[in-house]
Image (cartoon, rainbow, N blue to C red):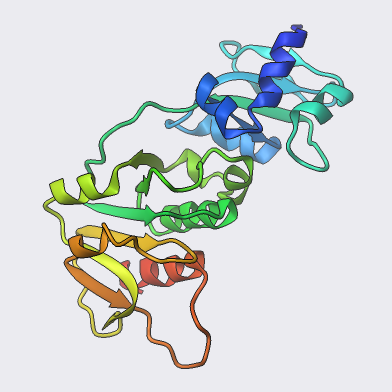
Length: 242
């Protein structure tokens, strides 16, 4: 049974922060259900698993290094107020250029919970590729990983220069804006790219001219705007023919 060294414990704690995740190329996955989903995913490479004495480690493949940690150590490593009994340390995947024909592009999303929800929405509607602008929040932020409820393990998430990516694609590009064609009147193509902008400023000025179609969710009340994740859910549902 392996135990953590002081240096290893320090490195794991640094994964709470984006800089540490980028330097190590790793991120944390917490809790029994989330770890189980990570282990079952073809997208995820497990670096090691940390667990307390109460966890049944017999379910973990012998090829994955296991570390037994005390409750105090788990408290220090965990990002949760009430740590659970197991954490997986996963590798951040290498960049792969999106090649699908149905892609969700997120431009400047800043809220980690919103991003996690949007990954969950994409997963629900069978959109397996999500592209984010480089200014968006880190998808391996612990809050994003938790909010995705495992969808981050089934979705290819890539960061890139959005303007460059959109200029190179041959797919039709649809962008969600406040003033655009109603999605009720739109005939959605089976293939394409859907762009959703940031919670506060919407789609960035450099991306806006690249849209082929500007679309909007009709407003019937007096709300100023919709939460980005809610808008994403409505748009993906319409795109899926619901």
